[in-house]
Image 1 (cartoon, rainbow, N blue to C red):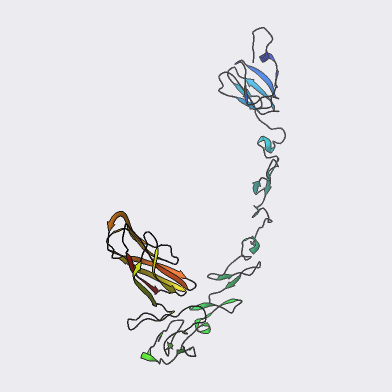
Image 2 (image 1 turned 90 degrees about the vertical axis):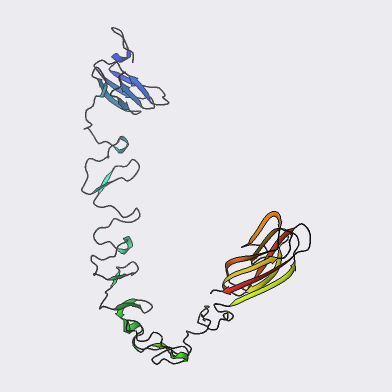
Amino acid sequence: LTYYNGAVDESRSAVIKVTGTATGPNIIQIPAVQKLYVFRNSSGNTITVQTAAAANTVTLKDGEATLVFCDGANAYSGIATAGVGTVTVPYGGTGATSFGAGFIISPGGTGNLVSVPYIPLDASSAAVSGILPVANGGTGKSTLSSGALLIGNGSGTVNEIIPGASGYVLTSNGSSWSAQAAGSAILGSNNAWTGTNAFSTTPTGNGGYTMLTTNTGTQLSGTNSWTGQNTFGNNGAGTGTPIYGSTNGSGGAAGYVGQIITSSASNVSCANGVTTTLTSITLTPGDWDINGLVSCNFANLNSFIGGVNVTTTIANSVGIYNGVQFGPISMPIPYTPTTVSVNTTVYLLLNIGYSAGSPTGNGSIYARRMR
């Protein structure tokens, strides 16, 4: 503001109205002379009133008016307290004159803050107090028995299962749960399965096996045992395959763990740089470990790659490629775990490169059923 000694100037005015169309905040500098002003901001943006020293300033938003005084050095707000009326949220207030005991929450936006005795669980549910119902993540109970298991009950109060005596187990009848003594729900002393593959109180069959005998725990007890060939159903009720161990060094029977499938080939003609199928095997559904061996007796090779795959494209490969003549060569194909769900052909593949001649390849593929 202009200030002239003995002449009309801006700073002599009691009321300073700032007008115009400000594109950003502005500073209004008053002289460092003791004086009281009424400032009105109509500039469209924030103004800051200060002296040149700027050790203290007064800021007005657009549309605000306030008293500003200068103490001879700096500008200060002429209103010491805002004790008149209610300060609204847009001006940093609460919009309320009093609050009840509890929590202060905001409804959002510029709405007045309000007090509530407790905080609602979420925006979509009513506030709750006392016992928390299941619908609000609670149990519906005020107390729970020590050591009890809690069982769901839809939206109703949860149910409890009391442990009962030592050694009780949790059992189900298909629709509900209860705690019972072990012998009332599962095999106890001298309980038996019947039929071809059964538990029996008297062990019989090859070798007189007495499996699970004299077990005095809370499950099988007494002299329960397998009889006969000591197996659970040969074919099973589902799609699983029983496990038979080999006792004479032979591979497992077809369809059983340990089954071996193998094939070999020799002197198979190989074109230069073309992947050739040496031989193949067909795997039945299951988990298999596959490996193999590939070789070539030719002396003038410059590349040699072998592998196994369920297609005629080489994968899971080993080989050498250096552009320098080498050979003969033989390389093992590393173990390759393979799972198939339908009958699947697995190929033993060889790709060799050479400058001249008519080389042939040899190889063997080997698969063992793991499951």
